[in-house]
Image (cartoon, rainbow, N blue to C red):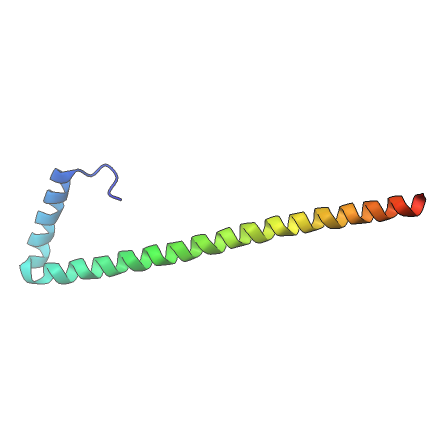
Length: 81
């Protein structure tokens, strides 16, 4: 999740956050950030699911068109014979 951020970088970020927000406000800020990240993750998962559903629906439409074309070709072949 943090990419290339190592332990020393995390400690520095936490120290700066402690200086900016203070010890009383820091837990509240952490909870707010946690809630925002959860909501972002939930929303991105929903969007991902919708995109996958649309991809599957499009694949089914393509398959349906192929089947209909095969049926038409087969019916035309039977009329000629």
